[in-house]
Image 1 (cartoon, helix red, strand yellow):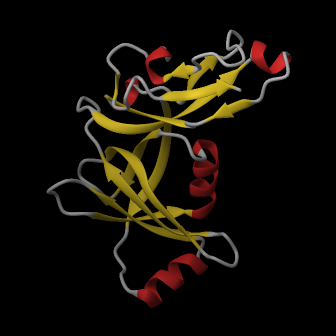
Image 2 (cartoon, rainbow, N blue to C red; image 1 turned 120 degrees about the vertical axis):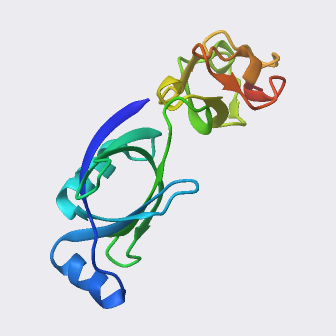
Length: 185
């Protein structure tokens, strides 16, 4: 899984007016949540935040959050939600979820199919039924994507099921292994 370092600072101002002033000063407000603990209000430099969010763009990523002004100083987090301005598409708020790297969690991982199926070369049509697979494992054991070669698929064949996917060690599939991901008609 992708790992990214992100600097931040504890936010000391609250309310709508204060948030607008932060954004005018190129700071983005955010919150780091964790189960059972008090949420940590944060602020991020907009340039650093945009750069890091573009780097992880839609992928599962463990972020090492370096918090200036917090006693713990570093937290491992996942992006929970990114709020954007509907007109300008600028990030206006970020919610992060603190995680324990040793505790298994559920993740949605994209499937990537490589190659050209034999059945397509013979005039068939490729049908992809599932684009993601649901996995459980420790955050650092989860891959960015599951890459599978579909070259052997023939026209009218059984197709490729979740059970045919090769998973890394210490990762469990939550989907039914009999469900077909891709086939050629």
